[in-house]
Image (cartoon, rainbow, N blue to C red; front, side):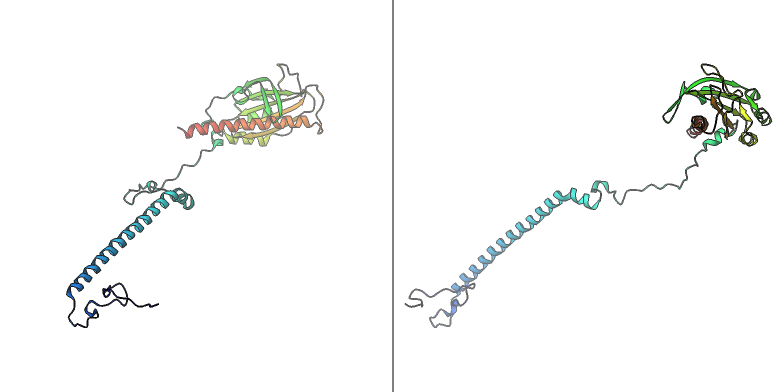
Length: 293
């Protein structure tokens, strides 16, 4: 068995194959190059190069197109997730650099109005004032306790609605009005008296001058029996703005109040607290109305 080439024409030169025979050295021993063969070989090389360039360009175009398509798909598919992750706004939400940004002069908000100021002097405390305005409805609820509303009274003769040392205190500080209301629950009655002055200073002075004998006169009637007429009762004194307010609490049965009668103390405290809230709300309402003008 032979591994050599047997017969046939000599191999043509292929520039892409190693050890192929040169056209000018075809084995005939001549020195003259075969120009026709050279031209044919050159044409073959040019064709192969063109094919390679075309094929390579197509592959590159396909690769670039694939990369762009993948990039577009990736950008479109992950845009929401990217915004969620980075917290950046979408392009439409980002203002362009040419957008003019308005400028404002620094300002400071006016200080809030003080509600107490509106109930501290006759000049500012101009809202309608009467017993129903301070003590509306037919009953009063404090927490889980409900008190039934009894009789009411309103007078400009403050001394006539007070007893003990209180008439003198009210007169000395120029009390202009004294409103009273009584509430009752389970045989315990309380009368609240609200004395009105022109200024906060007068109300504060009246509170300071009042003592244990400065008592507002209890108010009976409208289903409420007389109480605290000679019996020991519990009284309180306080003030807010141009108002001084007093309570007297006792049993409608006429028995004396002792320190163990917690119902009497809680009743008096509830009504004193409610009166304070009502006067403060009056100031808040007037302050709000003034701020909105």
